[in-house]
Image 1 (cartoon, rainbow, N blue to C red):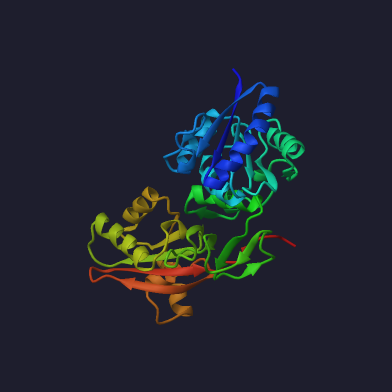
Image 2: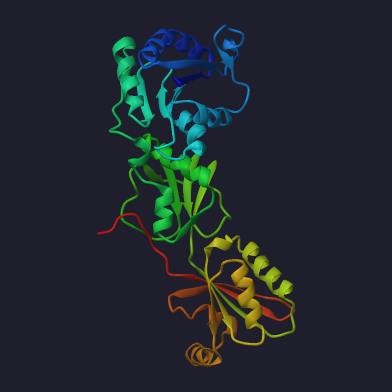
Length: 343
């Protein structure tokens, strides 16, 4: 079965440029025993023989082409192409080759190389036939630079949105600049292509809190840096306890994924708290009365929930919430640094 090349334009100017490229692309396709399909988003191409109008969102169109095409050519900026196909990326063994060609016909960028390097081969052909400079990306661009998902996995962090993570990794590897913000101390330099910013269309915010959204598309990198101390005095149901835990997190605008550990003061409710933590994948430690006594002597004037939150030894209390029903939760922030490169 012959392979397929799908080409899409997005504007009236892009459609005219698409028509000018069509003979050269179809000639290359014939030499490779491949078929071509031609698509247009702008209405200027609607009804023109040989072109299929695209009326669905481009991300949806891209997802469909990732399933049925061997090469996809976007006649637009690299950034626009990446934003639309990034959610469809699976890996080099499955993904088609992807080329982005600017509408001025200056550069042909092989954004994804393809299984056999088809993207660069086709770009070289267009350079010879149409004078469009082929940008040698040095292979598979998507695997060349900073990968936000790998970074999160290697640094005990959680990502808030896998599609945004792929979008950011793809944008960085295609030469786009990505904003970054955190209130934690940073060791080392930001990865290439990232810059400090509090606004922008796409960026990373490294924080346990979702209170601030700095970018149009904000990817949160959520460090597991919060410890909860819990003490219970009165007769409560498991539902009451869980609701108060969730309300505490919401009041502080904290992602549940930021919880590194729940430290429960030993008592009759210990099995209940352990069950709640198991259901929510929170690590849990039971703090004995003997341990609490040592903290009371060393740090007088605090409550048992605060002492429990501090048992790790590298945290500081940031909030204490008490309920009239007799439950107290202290939230402590562990000492946290962000490291991008090691000495």
